[in-house]
Image (cartoon, rainbow, N blue to C red):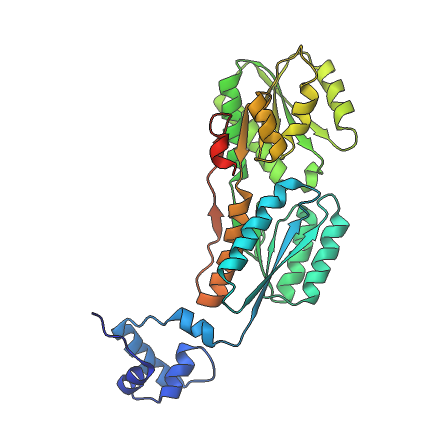
Length: 346
């Protein structure tokens, strides 16, 4: 078996005191360059690996991580994220870390900004954000950066030098996946790309999905299809959509960029004379119900529970065990239909 070296052993081999070795290993206090060089030479020779768990248990520092999440009572898409965060809290409850979740109204930029102000007052070590609003997220990331608070994002990717990491899917490619599925279902006709209840110009996640969807048809040079973008907003979703269907008799397919495919499926269920293929996102209960009824053809599963768990756990392991945080963690793009939905829904 490999020898387990103690601080005493290392001090003796380097010709320095145990206290000096302790300061180097635990990164506390000043050490002369000469002593540091001697100790590092010994550590390299013996391939020393510190017991990071033991190191953490001796630490008096308590790390605070705040998660900024849209309120799942307003949008049920985010409910699995709460479960993912709770898993991380349970896993690391024995360690010196506090994980708190703060909710904002996903329909209000003011709520988003106010919740961030409350988080800043708590001076956390890191913040994990679901950046629903692009412009406002860039603003608050600057504030966190000035306060030396680490920022990670999940679900939606925001480009920014101050953002340490992103967990989620490649949304552009998920749009391409949706397009390839639509191309399998249909031979020709009009396809509507529908954005529901969010400002498209401030929602990068919807823009990326549409770009990927359109790029697939452009790149493949598939003839016989025409693509139209439709933006719908509560409370006029039904009225505006019904008018759109009536004005577009050649409408054959619909791609919905949010988790609200059920809203469109519900409206179409009352129009027996039209058969229109629907592809949407996420295994919210209402979507799965319409999938099982055959009114939704495919759902793309974004695994938001796993996203939230990984977003939190990578931060915890960075602070506690000095693990590097990956710049990007991309999750698979899972295609769900009526045949395999039961394997994903617990």
